[in-house]
Image 1 (tube, rainbow, N blue to C red):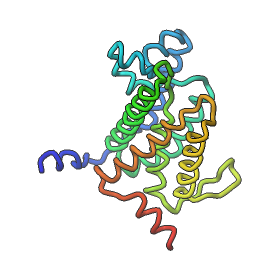
Image 2: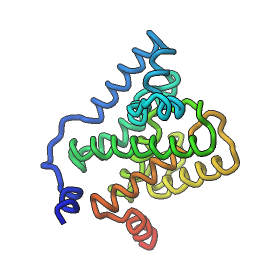
Image 3: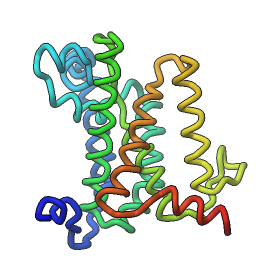
Image 4: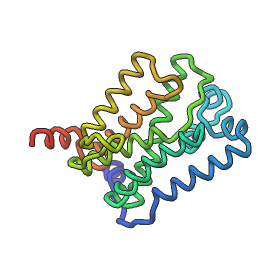
Length: 215
C-alpha cells in the first residue's frame, strides 16, 4: 500500500514554465553539438553498443536532448511549445516535467532493448520525438474536443490525430519505411504516456477517446 500510494502521490500544483526550460535545455545541447558534433553525439546520443559495453546508461535519458539538425530541433520544440505549455498548465509544472522525462526515458529503454535484441548495436538514437509524442497523447486526453489544423488547413480532433499518427508509425515500422526516423521510439513514447495515465493518474485515455466519439 505504501509503494502504491507513493507511486500515485500528487504534487502540489505550481507553474514555472517547465516546457520553456526544456526547450532552452534542448537549445543549449544543440549549440554544444554545433561546437563539437562528433563528441556530443558519441557522449549523449543513445548508442546500444556503448550503453551495454561501456555502461553509458545516461544515454537512455540524454538522447532526448540531442537533435540531428536544426529542422529536427525546430519541429520537436514547436510541438513541445504548442502542446506542452497547455498540458503543463493543466498538470502543473512538476507533474508535467515528471511525465515528460519518464516517458522520454521509457521510450529510450524500450528502443535500446529493441535495437539490442535485433542486432542493431551501432544505431544512433537521438531526438525528443518519443517524449513529444507522449505530450501529444496527453493533450488529446485533457482536451479531447480540441481541433488541430494539420498543415494549417485540415481540422482534426486531437484524439483522432493521435490515432492517425499511431497508425502511420505502426505502418512505417512494419513496412520498414521512413529512413532514419525512429518510428519505434515514437510508438514507445505513446505507449509510455498511456501507461503513465493509467498507473499514476488513474485515467484511461481509451475510455476518454471512445466516450467523445460516442457523443
